[in-house]
Length: 325
Ligand SMILES: Cc1cc2nc3c(=O)[nH]c(=O)nc-3n(C[C@H](O)[C@H](O)[C@H](O)COP(=O)(O)OP(=O)(O)OC[C@H]3O[C@@H](n4cnc5c(N)ncnc54)[C@H](O)[C@@H]3O)c2cc1C
Image 1 (spheres, protein in one colour):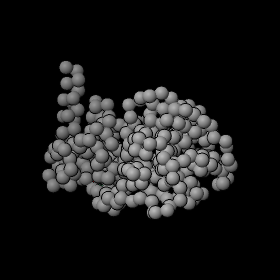
Image 2 (cartoon, protein in one colour):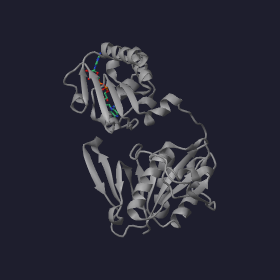
Image 3 (spheres, rainbow, N blue to C red):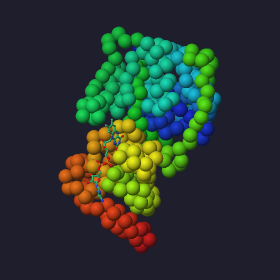
Image 4 (cartoon, rainbow, N blue to C red):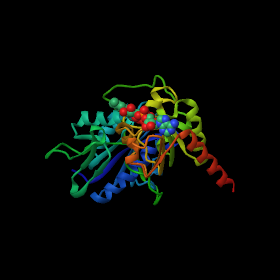
């Protein structure tokens, strides 16, 4: 087995996606352990600029394709690049494209597969993956079986790695010779663009999230004002999304988004385990709940017991006053 660390780097027209920057940082850290290179396997409309991933952590980049077609179209080219790449491990983002390509690679090469993981290490040349199961109640550690074929393919959950401060020069780029996809041609039938405010949720430093306790759209209007003053994004529990008060793209948790802000406000959210697994990586959690026994009080850094309809507007007004002072 090789020592290089490959990662699937998805590009939008505007440049590398957030997942590409996260995996570049993760791959660089693992490559430092293995003594190999962090190699971006780049695809998507802006992938011709894969050299830009150098400061993000990639030492080399292989451009698999620059079409806006579904990523599965580059599966054949990717499989050939992996066969030639001397890899110890391949990281794939837990995005729709990342999942498709990871599954294709595993199927074509019979490689060991893991994920979505929340940590991965390469100590002593052995890939070790940390996975959270049973809704976060159990953490499992796994590694490829003795004599397993080729590099392990590891699906990495969003926000497992943080993009690093840009450092160093451009990545050395090669362009892969295209190989037909064994899965035939795929085409995009329909696409829906998330609004900027929604897309920002996974990258936000501050999130103000609301739950059933907000009582409806009017309650969320108060949260939106607080988020605006703080320069943050609005999130929600599943109960709020199920009720139709906010779109599902705002849902945080087991079946929603996984976020990692510096500051997470949970207003009118009880703190069910399925919500917690989506926000427990937040650095600081402030909960506002009128029930002193709400489970969120057990893991909030600051637990404010009271009515969110009084506390949130008062907090917003005070922050406004201070910012104008
Ligand atoms: C398979 C599965 C997957 C799931 N996935 C997710 C997921 O991804 N994300 C998710 O969030 N949930 C998920 N759930 C649902 C989860 O179990 C909870 O039901 C949900 O998180 C509860 O949402 P909530 O906290 O908003 O509502 P509740 O549990 O009803 O809590 C509302 C809270 O608001 C407080 N409150 C009420 N009024 C006020 C007020 N005026 N001021 C202050 N506090 C007030 C109450 O005291 C209470 O604590 C999933 C469930 C299952 C079974």
